Amino acid sequence: MGSGGFRKRKHDNFPHGQRREDKENVTSSSALMISFKSFQLELDTRHDKYERLVKLSRDITIESKRTIFLLHRITSSPNREEILNESEVKLDAVRQKIKQVAQELTGEDMYQFHRAISPGLQEYVEAVSFQYFIKTHSLISAEEINKQLVFTLEEKEETTNTPSSNSHDKQQHTWSLKVTPVDYLLGVADLTGELMRLCISSVGNGDIDTPFELSQFLRQIYDGFTYIGNTGPYEVSKKLYTLKQSLAKVENACYTLKVRGSEIPKHMLADVFSTKADMMDREEGLS
Image (cartoon, rainbow, N blue to C red; front, side):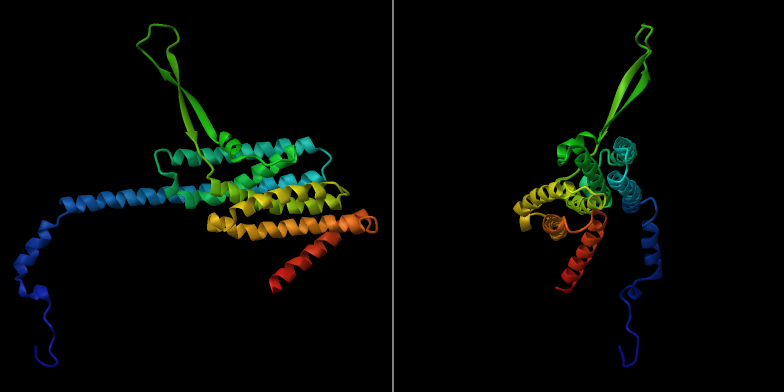
C-alpha cells in the first residue's frame, strides 16, 4: 500500500459473485436463523413475564402500605375489631395478587424472577406481621405466612365414560408461593419502624403501657438479628442499623416516661417524643 492510499478490506479480494452466494446461504430458513429466532422468542417471553411480575409486585406494595396505614388508626379508633376486619379484607386482596404471581411462576425457577417480586413480598410480610402483632402481641413465623400463600381452585370436569348421573369430576389446581428467609427477615426489620410509630402514637393517646411492651419486643428482635450479624446477606446487615435506630427511639420514649412521665401532661408526651426523635435523627446525620 502506498502512502496516502486506502487499505484493502479482506473481503475485497473475493469476487462479488462468491459474496452473493454466501448471503443466499444464510436465509431465514437456515438452521442458524431458526435457532436465533427461538432464542429471541424465549427472551421476549421471559422479559414480558418479568415486567408483569414487577407490576404485580408494585400493586402488592401499594395495597400492603394501605393496610399498614389503616392499622395505625387502631390507637385512636374506638372500634378495634372493625379496623382488624377491614385490614383482613385488604390482606385477602393482596393475597389474590400474590396468587397471580404464583400462577405466573408456575414451572419457572422463582429465583430467576426474585428481584422483580422481592419488594412486594417484603412489604406484605411487614403488613401481615404488623396485623399479627396487634392481634397477638407476638411475631408471626415464616411458616405461618407461607401457609396463607397456598391457593387452590376446584374446576368441574365433564366425564362421559361413567353412566352415573353425576357426570362432573372436581379437579383441583394448586398454586403456592414461598416467602424466602431473606424476604421474611427484611420484612420483619421494616416492621420495627412501624412499631416505633405505633409507640409514639400510643403515648399521644394516653397509653403508657404499650411503649414498655414494644421496647421488650423490639429488643428481642434486635437480639435475634445480632445473632446473624454480618454473616447473613448484605441487605439484612444493612437493615440492622435501621432496626437499632427504631429500638433506640422506643427506649428513649420509655426512659422519658419513667423519669419525667409525671411531670409532662399526657397530651404533650407525643410532641416531646417526636422532638427527641428528630434530634436523634439530626445527630445521627451529623455523625
